Structure formats: C-alpha cells, structure tokens
Length: 143
Image (cartoon, rainbow, N blue to C red; front, side, top):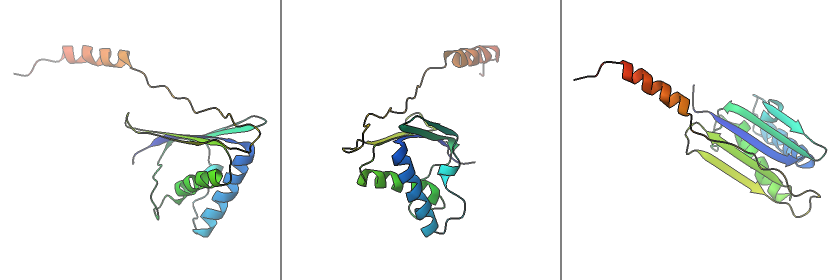
C-alpha cells in the first residue's frame, strides 16, 4: 500500500495558473502519461485572489527520476513560482507524527502577499487510549 501523506498548497490564482502551466510542460517533457496531480485534487477552494488545493492520503515521494514525476512536477513547480516571484505556502503531513514538511515564499510583486498558511491540528486521542486500557485490563495476565 505504501506510505501516505496529506498535502496542502496555497497560492494566488495567478500563481496557480503559472504552476499548472509549468507542471503540464514538465510532465509532457518527461513523457509522463499518468496525468497531472493538479487535475486530481481532493481539495480545491478559491477566492477572488487565492487558491487552496490539496490531496489526502497520497503517495508523495520526491525522488529524481522516480515513478512519481507528478509529485516532482509540483515540487519543481513551487521552485519555479519562487523564481517567478509568486507567493505560495506548502505543507505535507506524513503518517508518522514527526513527519511534517513546510515551504513557503513571499512575493515582492504580487498585490496580495499575505496568503493563509495551511492549518493542522494534532491532538491526543484520550478516549482511544482509555478504551484500549479497558480492553487490556480484561485480558488475563501472562506469567
């Protein structure tokens, strides 16, 4: 099944258009036939200025020359946005609690520079632990 992550990206609408243009060309140049992840979004919200996109439980492997060129296209595309001076926010949460990755860039030229940051919450699931403790208490002790 593989390791899964949740990914969120916030861009300006112009930045998203630039990212889409870049990833389409990148994937075409690599002869990648599985499609562009920007056409397969689990989350796609926008305002007059900003676009908030993302994927849930996705295999997000960043390896040069890997089978995941669609992921490489996004990551290279974010670098391209920085080079073209478009603001963006990127966050990835892996399955492991300590696996969190975040990148961002603030444009000097875009009208609206204050994009929202992806927000996540990690919390203690006390009910789960207490329920499991009750189950353990019901099992006989091993000698």
